[in-house]
Image (tube, rainbow, N blue to C red; front, side, top):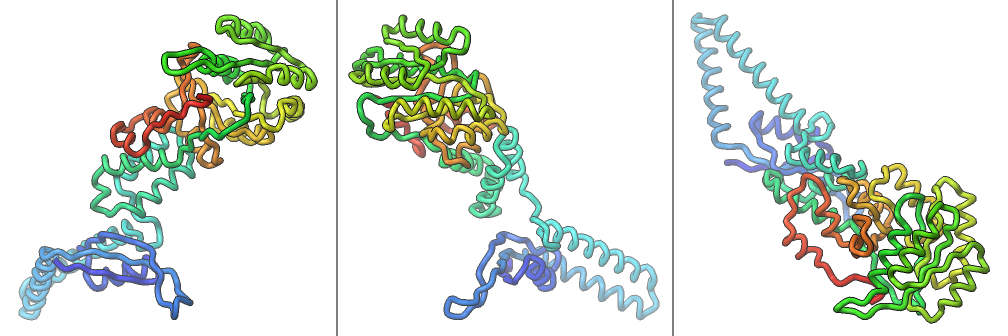
Length: 399
């Protein structure tokens, strides 16, 4: 078996060389971009390099065809079957030429992209079915082509596991930082994402004693006095858990309440649900929340069921609040999380908590990469391998 390496300035140039030297049956193994020429590290230009092989069988077949052609010529010279031999030879040459053209087209000789490997195509469709963004998919597919040989591309499970790990690498988990006491945690977000229920869940897991931790001193404040039943809802949660709740409407009221709760460990602030397109109301709420002081932290709640275009708008319009993380709510209500993973990765926003039900306080947990990767549809998840790659640490806050 003969191996070869050919280089040139373009795919067409290299493929022409391969076709000219080795014929139709040359098999391409790898393709990569390279730097060519130059002097002392300068004046280098971009090029491409192909490697491949020509099998002994191909060379033997070529010899047989040559002998057949010679025989046809000799027969023609002797006046035997002249027309038939020539026509058969021409037919064979046309057939060979057609196969050459097909091969060159499939390997990108005309300057177009190489034909997609079936495993890449299958995984690309799987990513699309999970609602990952176009840019996210393109980046992953390009990485597959860069890092896998043609031989490795035949191993579907290997590629799939690698893609899961690459997706996990792109998920940013919120890391807690030291803060002053009391810690003031403000939750903002559009209407209907479950902010009040999430506040109650956080209050419960931090304000109620368990076998492995003592309770924190928790207070809840709501500025949502407009939504029907909102005040009653959070007051009911407070009564059940024995956690004080205050309802405020003005900057001065909020400032005084914060000072009143100065001896608490944690103050959770529930806000009014606003449409991200309601710029005036968002600006008013941001000004009101300034009463919480510069040491307060803002987190953005987004429903996992939100459409891609709406997620982009929410992330953008709540940016003036300088939110530190995103809390994903209603994870139990969707089977597709690719759009959320894509957009948060592209915007550089970390995830702190995930909620997946209405039960207080059970249906909330600190976000982990494993939790989101297991939510992907159609992937065969090897949990043990992923846990070795992304170990779960005790990331619960306010311990």
